[in-house]
Amino acid sequence: MNLGRAKSILIIAFAGLNLFLGYHLFWPDVGRLTRVAVTAEELSITETMLNENNFFLRTTIDRSARVSDFLSVTPDRNLQGEILQSFIKKGARVVESDGTTAYRTDEETSLVYTSGLIRVIYEPGVLLVEGTAGLEEQQIREHVEEFLNDAGLIPEGIVYDYMEKSDAGYLTLHYYQAYEDKPIYASQLAVTIESDRVSTVQIYWLQPVERVTSREIEVTPATEALAKLVDELGPSSSPRDITALDLGYFSGEYDAEKWEMPPVWRIVLDGKEHYYINAFTGNIEQDSVIPEQLP
Image (cartoon, rainbow, N blue to C red; front, side):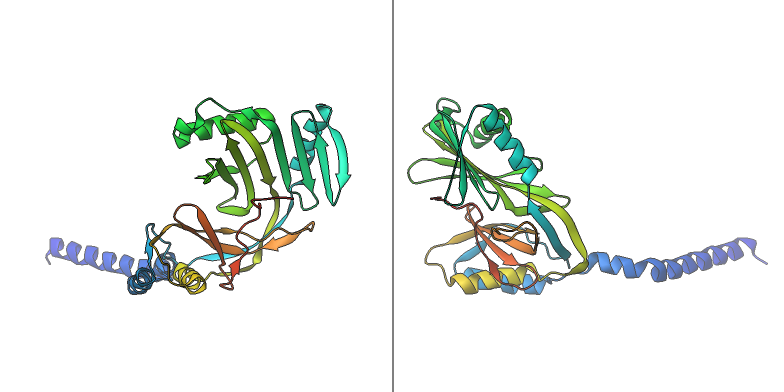
């Protein structure tokens, strides 16, 4: 008997057995990990549809099959209390009217709304740095975050989002909240700079209570969110760039103590215009929590 040949046959047999067992033990999991909700063909069809309507995809999209749940939240009253207590220590006068409470000092006024929204108005403004308009975005951001930290207005989980410039030359830096592995786009902080001075800080911050994992289901594909947006907006008269498309949580502003927030696809046009598509229903959600103008 040829012992070398026998050993080779046994090695091959064991290798085959291992492959067989490995396939049946692990292949189902591998299949789930690599399962896609959007095929290459579907993505190509979506891009063609976008281009025909003058929208152009400038970012990658998540093609994998994703699941999500609802997030139970409540206004962050602890943060609100800490901020307001700091104004009281400065000797702020408290004035209540029309559903808002105002905390006033000689240089600032903090308007507190029952929903939890806080708007701090600085008069004549706090100097950030001379020549703000000539600085790079990263430099402005560093100065703003130093200001927020010194003023006690930088909440936990804050994430920088983007900076916009108004026609009048004002700069506004926007932030949102991160929780575990997803953004909470409804939690927002905005800092406005006018003529090198911080003029307003608006904060609407939420306290996550729990993720409702018992209601976890598969979300609609990102391509469906894109199709819904184009259907809602219609063809664009000028080219529009889709610069970001991410999954997070969002809901409009509620005057309530607790509610559930659905997952959304956030689509960003031209780096500044935001739309939120409910990732379960496909409906477009309210597009802003912090209003541009407050009474």
